[in-house]
Image 1: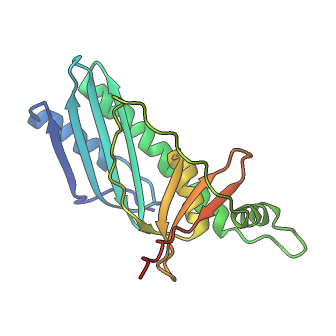
Image 2 (image 1 turned 60 degrees about the vertical axis):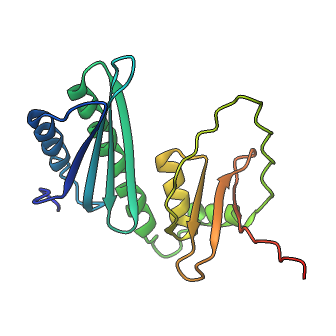
Amino acid sequence: MQTANINLPVRVTGRHVSITDAMRDHAERKVASLHLDYPRIIEARVILDVESNFRHRAEIVLHCANHITIEAHSTTADMYASIDETIAKVARMMRKHKTAMLKRNHRPGKGRKREGVKFLADRLGDVAEPMAPEAAPQGLILHKEVSRVKPLQEREAIEEMEIRKLPFVLFKHPQTERLSILYRRQDGDYAVVHPELEAKAS
């Protein structure tokens, strides 16, 4: 078991706030206290921010083994409370990852049906075109986000979407290196879209 995160690289940065030694030490100690054996933490980032209404926001990003990234944030009236609350969220997400891993690696005994696994596989095969997004009204601010494309199996993409509460997951199949988008349809089923660029007319 990973009983301690010894010499774990932890980067603490600030936005609109000066990071004190006490604040940095608190963040580093809290991250190092995540004594969980899965997923194994490789690097951690802590971003502290004071918003315009003097709300203190703490964001933690963990880069873990097996291409797993865990992100969480909290906003309170106190920076130390925000760090503690975010750490609690991260710990819950790590436990969910471990539970999902244990279920994935579980092999049923002879004669037992793997109905849960078959259900997911069936849903992945049911692909439908996503609904076209509505045009943004004039003056509406569109938030642009940068997302890393990670190599994932379809089942791992489902776990990533469910654990992190994402509306969709953009991923690359590790064998085919093909870009795919996993999302949940309105009927609750999963669907996978494989984008293809149209060939230019000669």
